[in-house]
Amino acid sequence: MVKVAVLGHGTVGSGVVELLTKNHKSITDRAGQEIEVKYILDIRDFPDTPYHDKFTKDFQVILEDPEISIVAEVMGGLSPAFEFVRSLLEHGKSVVTSNKELVAAKGAQLLQTAKAHNVNFFFEASVGGGIPIIRPMHQCLAANEISEVAGILNGTTNYILTKMIEEQMPFDEALHQAQELGYAERDPSADVDGHDACRKICILASLAFGHHVYPHTVHTEGISGLDLNDVAYADSWGGVIKLIGRAKKLADGKMVATVFPAILEKHSQLANINDVFNGILIRGDATGDVVFYGRGAGKFPTASAVVADIIDIAKASCTSKSLSWDDSPENHMADYKTAPLRFYIRLSASQAAEARQEIDRLFGEVEYLARSGQPENELALVTGEMTEYQLEEKLSQLKSGTLRSMIRVLDY
Ligand code: NDP
Ligand code: HSE
Image (cartoon, rainbow, N blue to C red; front, side):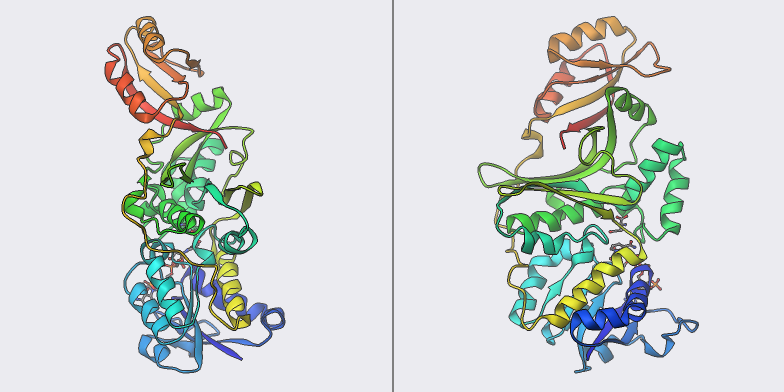
């Protein structure tokens, strides 16, 4: 019998306890032994749950109970989650977590602590909700050199974009629905401003390339600046706008990681991933592209990944060697503005014909776009490939138009 504690009884934590109870028999068969929840830690009281006798508010009780060998940290946030997890590992208890903020900030350190104490620190639920991605990356794809990871990594923003674009739902209403459905972070600006996707690309890049990628080194933009006029132009071009996190290893060994809204061609692999679904593309030298798809957030999809980690630890006799990365060396991140891309730009220009002449002279061959209801003084276009520095230089020389929006175009 394995006895576990669950820290946090919110959306994910309540799902973990319910799933371990509901699927008790099949989970016992797969783990090779029974898994019993002994404690649930939360600040609040939950007198009406069938598990009310398991609740405690005292972390020390869990830390000092020798019967507890696995703890699920599903509270979120950095503190006290970090201090709790570090103490648990140091006390010889394995930890599983859905907390991407914690893994993105402290993953290298906690993995080392786990190894030093011969226990496991697993975080399958921290990326992609219910999608198996962490374990496939360090186990099933272990024979590959991975050159690139990219994806739709945030369910809330993908839900909002889908509702806004397909149902013309206002942003605030779509966000409210995502919160009601348990998809959004406690502070939803983490979703909307791209920080949640940033944490996830940090975890994937660390795992893929072997060195910790810290969130402050990733250029991050969210979806709050998106304009429905740009959605219409993207549509007329045959594209859709998605929030994409990506990390790439460059020829000189450095890596570049970014999160920003991007235009994808409608037929591309990530373009048709809608609603709360996530899609993650891994580019391996042996496999080519592998795409993982599924529900990226929500109570039971996320609990499924947390419980899978618990089962894996219950089955394992030693610490995992393949789930590991080192801390980051100096200057291992490249400047994202040096990568060549195509760009969508929208401009206002009182003299549109004159602006077109100037654009043609500065940018060479471009594709002009049209939308219904397009004002006479508005121009939208997709450039050829150039770096972002080159784009900025050309835009700084443009005298007859004012930039209204710029969205990068990606080929996935
Ligand atoms: P919730 O806010 O729903 O749940 C967190 C729970 O932990 C709350 O009940 C909270 O209590 C409790 N809690 C917070 N701090 C403490 C503390 N110091 N001691 C005891 N209890 C505490 O969050 P979620 O379940 O949605 O998310 C949990 C984690 O999982 C986060 O890291 C999140 O990013 C991650 N995650 C969430 C997903 C989702 O779809 N929701 C998907 C994948 C990952 P109180 O409410 O009283 O503060
Ligand atoms: N808020 C996150 C999302 C939860 O919407 O993707 C899953 O990590």
